[in-house]
Structure formats: C-alpha cells, structure tokens
Image (cartoon, rainbow, N blue to C red; front, top):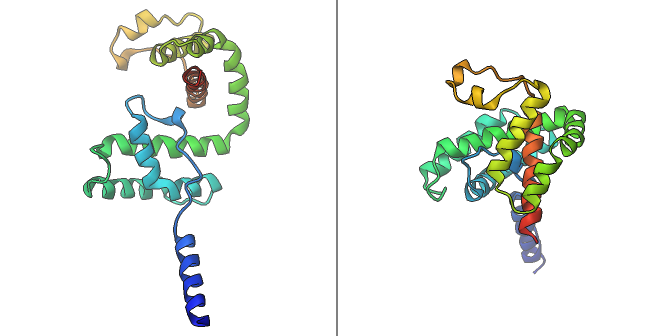
Length: 191
C-alpha cells in the first residue's frame, strides 16, 4: 500500500510539473493589425512556455523556437485554419515587444504618461464607443505631428510608401498608443 501511495504521489507530481502554467499573455498591443483575438489566443496556447521564459529573461532563440512550434501546429492542423504567416507575425511581434519592454521600461513609462496627455481626446472618444481602427490612425497622425508639426498626412499617405517622408518615431511610442486605445476600448466594452 505504501508503494502504491508513493507511486500515485510521484505520478501526480510529475504530471503537475510537466504541465506548463500559462502565466504570460501576448501583449495585445503587439499584435499585427490583421490578427484576430482567436489567432492570438491560439498562438498563446502554442508558445506559452516560451512566453514565460521571455518574461523571466531566460529565453534563448525564442523567436525561432516559437516559430518552430507554430509551424508544427499549423502542419498538424491545430490552429483552427490560421496559417503560419499570421501566427509567426504574432510570435515575432510579441517576443520583440516583451523584450523591448524589459530592456527599456523607463521609456515605456514616460511614453505612457506623455501619450495620455497627447491623445487624451482620442482615448476618451474610444472610451465612449469610437471605432478603434479609426482612433488608432488618428493617434498615429497626431504622434507624427508631435515630432514634426509640418507633417501632412494627406500628402504623405497619397504617395508610394517608398517615397514617403515620415518623421522618425520609436516603435515603443506606437506600442504604448495602441495599448492605451485597447484599454479604452475594453473600458467601453465593459460598460
């Protein structure tokens, strides 16, 4: 009887230790514009262990390993029809954003405070039900104009992308803007 209890206890501990706890989520502000919530959640489930490693700072070759897991899941038909192209972009953006947030937390904090002021009216519009995509586009234009007041979106967006003269803006600024707008959209949806 003692051996049986020991065996059951050992098996339970082994299963518990082998089952990853999905503690870290993909930052929604890092997702590509064409990614659906379902695709993000499926990707999260596939690469959950790697996201934990990235969060803890212990991941090596994480994007390559995560993309290999996604590729296997796509081939096995475990992605509900989502293809490698969409899911690998989710992986790449999520891991790069998480690493950037770890390496430059002061920048993300200062940009959060700055953008809360710069985009206050747009954030309020989204909290009151404005379309997220339109608000995101307005926020991007305002960010560009905060860097270069002479930036004319009608002129720049009407020419071929390779000839555009866009002001230099850090990726973190757009990431924080999307995060603030997503939070505003979630606040509206919870009303």
